[in-house]
Each structure stands twice: as structure tokens, then as C-alpha cells.
Image (cartoon, rainbow, N blue to C red; front, top):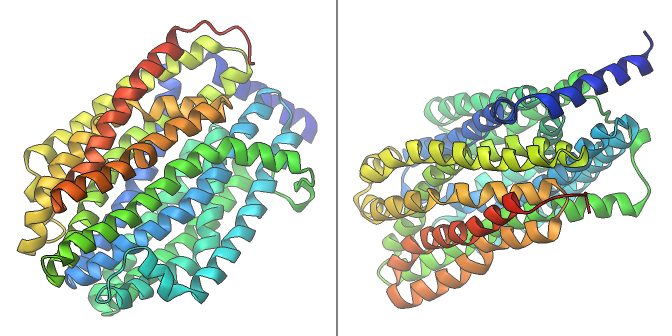
Length: 463
């Protein structure tokens, strides 16, 4: 059997798997590895927060500041990864492997080039960048150390996430998980060694993050070459601007979703510093540190809903192209129910004992007193995200970027930022604590009728 026949046989087997496997089983099979990889990523972010927290609340606040920068990098990566992955899945449904290879190769090399530009620009303007992200004068030295390491790893981070997402869209979620989990576990181990034994402080945490990103990239690249149907080669780089327009347009909801998280985190840090600083400089750092802890734990809970929803993405994209519209709708409903059960099971213990989870990361009384009510509010808001995330990702996966972009704008843009300014103007630091949870609740309630309409609406064509 020659290479062409082998490729055709793989395409036929994959087509049968994606269109005939029971939807619930398929989504769980693809969603669990994605959820595990996202949880490990969240855990190693929390490990940074924990180990740096042993150095004091000011160094720990630097992690929250630079987390915003990481979110910006991830926004670019997800835009290219989800945008190209959607079309890779579409072309695999059409059994056109060469076209699928054009999408992934073009996105991969474009992502690497953008990463190099971001690294250079960020290092040149490191001081003003950290201040723009909300760093106070006391936090700035630590934020610069950690931020420098993150910027140096930027090209590897972007390319890793492009590889990870395209592996998922090819139904290779386990291999995508293996690459990220390996890097995450390595990061946690190096955090322990660099901070506890080498006494490198915040710089050690940054070095652990950068090294783990490089190794994770190398593992994912090997996995892609060994398992994916599509190929990453220079010869597949497309010169047609239309292809890049398709990738960017389809991936734009992911950029909005992640980019607005970055913007809102920066605004949140700035306002926390402002209203905390009106009380004292110690309170400014405590407010930023408190929200850093809350956001880390809250993002951990959200990873469950997000991971299951990402298991839906290749299923929705492939079956929509194959005109199996009933499977797309069934997949959306199943994903919503599974996500809701998982997020509720994970969130309720935190709502019941928020102070316990806060003090796992920071026992400083000023921080714990501020973060404890904020933690309860944040996790309550997370209970509504399974109503919003699956329908958002469904519209993106079936190449409806306008509706997907509107839904992405809700949580961290159209609702959260106005609410943040309004609530802080009225209630000060209390507004910092409640603005995101209120936004999450409203986003879920607005998304619910949109999801119900999608499921009930007759679908006769791809147009």
C-alpha cells in the first residue's frame, strides 16, 4: 500500500469515527484529555502563585500582573490555533489533506513570526508594559523579572498552542494533552527546585515557566509529525491572503475571548491598586494579590467547562461540514449538561469554604480578608459559564464568526468592563469583588435562549 492509499484509508477511518461514534462518548473522549491539559496548565500557574507566595504578597502580586501578559500571548495563539483548526477539520471532512496542511502550516509559521515580534517589542518596552498592566512601584521589580522570562518564551508558547489546538481538531486530543501536561509537570518541579533550593525567587518561577514552554513545544512538535494527518512544512505555506483572512476571521472570537480577559485583568489590577491605594499602599498590593489568588482558583474551575467545550469543537466542525446537523445540536446539549455538572461539583466546596482555599496560597490577613468574599462570589459566577461557553464555541466551530464574536464580547467586554467601572465608582473595593461574577451570571442568562434557539431551529444547509 503506497502513501496515498494509506492517507486515504486514515481519512476514511477518521470520517467514520467522527460521524458514527455516539456523540456523548465522542465529546467525552475528546474533552477529557483537553480538560486534563487545561487543569494541569491552571495548576502550574497556581504553583507559581503558591511558591512565589512564600516570598511575600508583593512578589506574588507580580504573578497576577504578568498573567495578563500571558493571556495576551494566548489570545494570539488561540486565534491562530482555533482558526486554522476549524478549517483543518473542515478539509479532513472533505478528505483533502493537502488543503488541511496549508492551513496548519501557514498558521504555525505566522504564529512563530508574531511571537518573535512580540518578544522584541516587549523586552524593549518592559518597564512601561508592566506599568500598563497594573504594576505598582513596589511590584515592578518582580514583575519585570517574571515578565522577561515569559516574553522570551513567547514564540514557543504561541506555536505550542497552535499545535495543541490543531491536534485536537484532528481528534488527537490525547497527544495534545501529553505535550501540555509534560510541560506543566516539569514547570511545577522546576518551581520547587529554583525557588526553594536555588533561592532564585520570582526569577526562578519565570525561568521554570520559560523552560517548560520550550520543552512542551518540542514534545508537541514531535507528536504532530508522528500522529497528525495534516503536515507542517515550508512548502505548504500559502501565499493567498484569503486563507489568512479565513483563519483570522474564524479565530477572532477566541482572540476576543482571551484578549478581553487580558484587558479586563489589566483594568482590574489598575482599579484594585487605585482604590486599595486610597486606603494605604499595603492595601493596594493586598487587593491586587487577593484578586490574583481568586482569579487563579476561578480559572481552575472554569477550565473544566472550557475543556469539555473544546472537546465539542472538532465534533461540531467536522459534522457540520459533513451535514450531520443533528449531531452538532446533540453535541451542544450534551456538552452543556456535562460542563454544568462538573463545574458545580468542583465549585460548591469552594463556595462553602472560600477562606480555606484562599489561605492555601496566601495567609497574610489583609489579603485573606479581601479575597475570601471575592472567592465565593467568583465561583458562584462560574456556575453560569456552562450556559455560555459551549454555544460560543459551537458558532465558532461551524464558521459563524459574527455570532461567536458577539458572544465572546459579552463576558469580559460589553458587560464586565462597564460593570467594573460602575461598581467600583459606587462601592470601591467591593466593586472589584463583585463585577466579574455579576458579568458571568448575566452572560449565562443571555446565552441560554440563544442556545435553545440554535437547538430548536431547523438546519437544512451549511449556508
